[in-house]
Length: 255
Image (tube, rainbow, N blue to C red):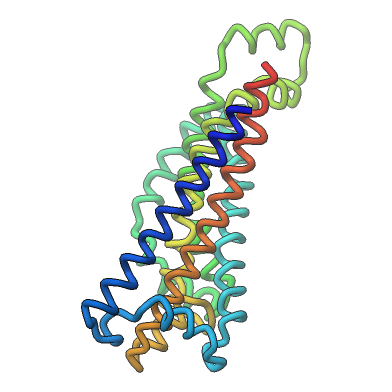
């Protein structure tokens, strides 16, 4: 019971902090007589959603697909790659330095290449999000798979457990905290990857919309786009936290 009360208190404080920020924003703009072109009020920002020419729903959907799609692909391939590294150590010694070198490439530099290879659209921006999310998941999951106690592995091998049983019963449960740590970092990076892709070349999305309204100095629409991008990223991060609480915290309580 105390745990549920603590969780409710945590959510209440989180909501309160955001409401305080909005109130400070409102009073700063209204009573500080800040021009709308510099910083719009919360009311003007929300009112920008009523402009039909900005195609908010279409742009929100495009950005959401890029963020969630890039993150999901990175999570699947990142975990599978880490699994292969744990099964074949020679593969890790061969490929991990290559992945580190590729990760050193500035992702912004990949934007023009993505446009040349895949033209404009959602797919290259999804790949941009994938490229920036992949490495943290691989790195943390691979470390988690290595951190499993050797005695447990020897016990399963002694009982003639298969490699898949070794992974599902011992390695994966032990590696989940590491995996979710990488996924939480990747959830934040996915937003940056998708928006960078839209800035460099896109036909839709909230990042693309920000570039369009920048020409007309519609700061309210730019603020609204930033808020919506933050909400999409927050939703993805919340989903990862929920999955972590279900798979990791739940298992810890059972044990």
